[in-house]
Image (cartoon, rainbow, N blue to C red):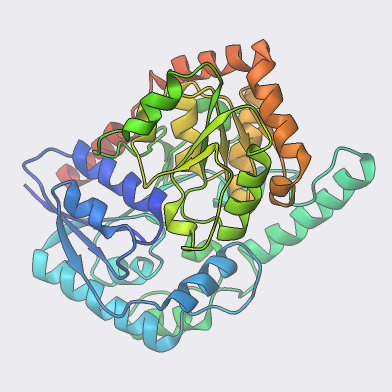
Length: 409
C-alpha cells in the first residue's frame, strides 16, 4: 500500500475537517500523514487519530489575517514572500521524499502546487466549484455586484469580465511563486488560476451546482464533504431544544470576524428564540452577548438535525453543506465570492435566504430568521435538500479517485 500526504491550511476549519473526512475514507492499509504550519485546528487531526507533522515556517496572526484579506480580494498585498514560499517548498519536498509519498492531497495549501510537482507526485485538490477555472470561464455573472435591477446586472457582467481576464491572464499571483517554481524546476506560477488548479480537481458539490457547466479534463465532481467532528454534543443543546421557543444555530466557521459575531448576536437577541453559537474562538473576555445567545466551543454540527429550527451562517461551504445535510434552513451572509456562490445556489433550491455581511447587525437579519421559522415552503425545501444529500458521499468518492490513481502508478 501507499503513503498519502495531506496538506490542509490548518487555521482553516473547513479545510482541516474536509481533509480528515477524505483520509478516513481511504483504505486503512494506506499510510496517512498530515502536515501543517499553524496550530489553528491541527488538534482535530490528532483527535481523529492521524499522524501529524507540525512544520515551519508558520505565519504570524497578522500574516494570517493578511492572507485571508488577500484571498477575499480586500488587498493586493500577500504575506507569501520568497523566503516563506521557498522554505515551505523545501519542507514539503523533504517530507514527500522521507515518507515516499505516492500522492499529495490539499485544501488550499498553494505551495504544494510547486512541491508536489517538483517531486513528480500527483496532486489532488478537494475544492468547491466556485472560483475554479471552469466556473469563472463559463459563468456570465458571478454576483460580484449585488442587486436585481438592470443596472446592477450590467455592472456585474462588466465586473465578471474583468475578473475573468485578471484570473486567467493577469500576472497577479505573488511573484514568489514564479521565482520559487523556476528554482525548483517547475513551470512558473503567475496567474491566480495557476495557484488553484491541481492535477486532479475534486469538486465537492451537488449535481445541481454544476447544471449548465462543462468540466474540462482534470475536473470531476465527487460530492459534498463536511465535518463530522468526533465530540459529544454539549448538554446545553438538548436543554435548549426541549424548550417551547425555537432554537437557532449561529455558525460562522473560521473566516468571519469578532465584529460579525457581535453584530449577528445583537440582532438574534431581539427575537423570542434561543441561540446556540460555537463562536467562542472569536470572542474576547470582555464581550457580553444577549442572554438568549449561548456560546459553546466547536460542536458536532452534523448532529443538529431535528434539534435546531434554523441557522445563521457565513456561507463557507462546510457550514452550508452541514446545514443542508441536516435539513436546517439558513440565512447565509457570504464574505467573499465563493461563499456568496454557496449561499446563492441554496437560495435557488429554496432552503436558504441571502443577506450581505453588512446586514448582520441590522433588522434585516432578524426579519430573515423570522421568515425561516414561519415559511413552510422553505422548510419543505430544506427537507428535500436533506434527502438529496443523504445520497451523496464526497469523501468516499474522493478516496476512490485517489486510490484509482495510486493503482495506475
